[in-house]
Image (cartoon, rainbow, N blue to C red):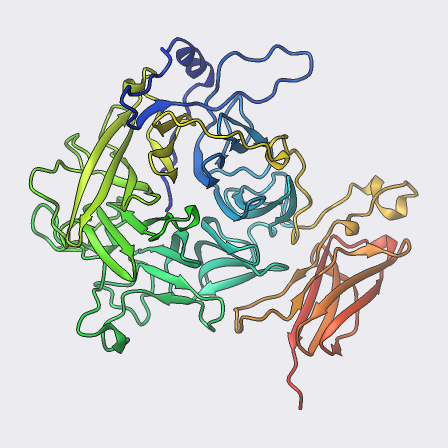
Length: 586
């Protein structure tokens, strides 16, 4: 879900304060306890003295685990720590990458040594108009086997620019989805099919808030706004959860239909969530509910995977005669959805509120606890002045019952003082959870179990190279152009052409296995690719907006092809554009 942007604390003050804190202790009876577990400082330059203290990482947008001893977090950086990623090896968090971090970035695992990040676009891109655009969370990085193998972005402030993205999930190395804000065609998505990135716009006109994978199926949640179109939806209770089905002409399938839309539901299909009323008895306006944060323990190998969705008041203004949202929590297991907060299933008498500080809490992120039919929820309350991280645990105790089993405040209790509100939470195993704060500090729920050290070399070094963005022109200085007489590596050896997509009409892409372009001599560009169907193909080279070279539009049969394009050294291209459209046989 979209998370609140919080101010950074001074890194030096945080380091000094942490250095004076007492070491954390674990419970003697072996029960899990929250401890302070900050990340290691970045490697020091050669010849410099290493810092004896850990540091604040800056705002952490996401924490994700492949295994209890293999985790990742993404940070926007701070005055000491560059933006990038940190990795957990079962013992400590250490710097993994100085590139591909994000202001509020996200991480999606695609395999044990493969993952994607929603990252900030690299700075320094000036548009032909002379303007620039926001760089936050508008590009993708593809990590594989210890390096960044792909970087994807588009020029800023253009009709085809990527929108800021809030959510990411992969159910396999060949099926990854990234969701974000709205454009003129609907909710902006990017889809990776194993060889190409394509733009897919959801017809539902709602910003994407969160994504997760459960039992091999990608789920996404949406954020409602008064300005959304709500075409074909019940505005009093619009679907806030979708399934993503790549094989469908419209991949975004709304959950919780009414029984006349889906006869298999029987007599009742609950239009969840049930929003209820506010403290004044007014019906809650759905627009005031934040986009639901999603989490599943399916990836952790749980016998009965569980999916959790949690949200709360997001600050939006309710409509006339309507109230503000209270916390909402949904639970899905074995084909059944249940609302456990508020009282579609009533919590037992005597349970305390989610956050007993005299203000309404907002679930910020949620983490299913593997194998426990329980979830930890990181909550925030803007009116709470303590500056600490608040987390609550909700457990399913029966078919019609649930309870809040733990409510913890992280900071003073760990001997380190306020370290910011919770920004992200993850649980790779039972009694094993991690919380990151808005200031970049970490807390670990642990019973003291010692994990084996992850020795995979792909997570041991520091990655510093991000390849050129596919889709963004690579502009060489004039003195390095091919016509200057200087020896240089032409940018076309690193540019992958952008393929044109309007809206996904079919599951099967027209172009696959697109090679990187290469020069067979100083002026002839060669590009190879595979067509999955008979298609009309044209390769266009552009210098900024002007076409400087192009092939004829040619109909090619299905199979592997190579095209060649003669370039002019005085009008050297800055971008490539491969157009391919399926052609039906007459």
